[in-house]
Length: 389
Ligand SMILES: *Cc1c(COP(=O)(O)O)cnc(C)c1O
Image 1 (cartoon, rainbow, N blue to C red):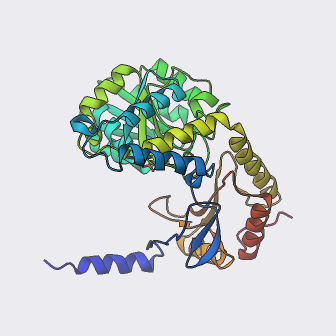
Image 2: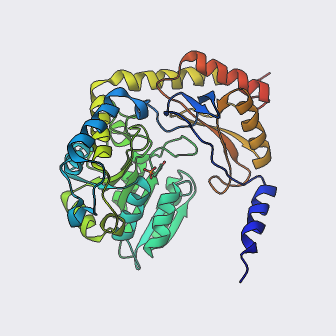
Image 3: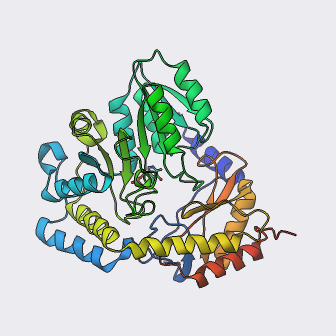
C-alpha cells in the first residue's frame, strides 16, 4: 500500500487554492500581533474583548499555578476534579441562569459529547445549514437521523418537525451567532415552533457570551429567553480569551452528561489555571460593561464606514464576512492585505460553501477607529470594496 495519495491530495488542494498552512504568532494575542518579526493589525481573532492578554487574567492564572500546579492529572471522574472546576461551573450556571453547568476541554467536544449523549438511533436532530462543524460532527456521530433546514428558515424547520413527528425524540440545534456569517438565529421563533412540536432545543452560544445581552451573558439574555432553552452550549475560547467548553442547563441534564458524555468522561480535566483565567474573565465582563460597549462602538463605526460600498456586508455582530467568491480571488485579497500589514485569512471551503469564500473580519474592543480606517483603506486598495455610484 503506497502513501502517494497524500502528496497527490496535497497537490490537488494546492491547485484548487484550498491548501491551508499555519502562520506563527510570536507574541501575545492582541489587536496587533507579531508575525515574522513584524507587527500586523489583526482582524481575525475571536478574542473580542481583548482578554487573552489581559493583566488581571494572566495574574489569576499565575496565582492558580502557584496554588494548584499546572496539570489536572486525570479525568474529572477519576481524580482530576478540582476546586476551580467546580467554582467555574457554578459561575457559568449563575451567568447563564441555569441550575448547573458542566465543563469540557473545548467547545468542540462539548457539542460532540452532548449531542451523542442526548440523541441516538430512533431520534431526529434538526439543525441549521450553517451550524458550526462541531455540531455537524456531533450529529453525525450520534447515530440519530440528521436533518438540515436552510439557513434561519423557521418555516422549513416546522415542515421537518411535522415530518418527523413519530421519532422518539426531536432535538433542534442551532448556533446563536453564526461563526462564519456573523448573523444571528431567530431564537424566539425557534422556541415557539419547538413548543408546538414538542422538540428539545440546543443553542450553541459560543460567539454571544461576553458580546450580547445587557450584561454580556449571551443571546439567551439578549432575546429574553431564560428557561426556554433546554441545552445551552458555550465556549471560553471566544470573548473570554481562554480555553474550555461547557453545557449549561437543568441539574438532571448535567448529571446525565457526567454519566453519558464520552468526551467528558474519557478525557483529562482542564488545567485548573485555565479555569482561574475563565473565572477572572467572567468577573471582568460583569464589572466592566465598558469593554462590551467599546466593542459595539467599533462594530457601529465599521458598519458606518462600510455603508458607502455597494457590496457592504450585513453587520450584526463582531463577525463581519466580506464574501469574495472564489478561493483564488479570496487568497489574493488576503495576501494583498497581508502586504499592508493587516491580517485576515481567507476562509475557504469546506469551512464555507463553494463560491462563498470570504474574508472574515472580526472586531475587538481594543481596536481603535484609526485601526478600522486603516482596514477600509487597505480593502479599497485590494479592490474588494466596490464604491456605490
Ligand atoms: C469556536 C466554536 C466552537 C468550538 O469551541 P472551542 O472552544 O474553540 O472548541 C463551537 N461552536 C461554535 C459556533 C464556535 O464558533
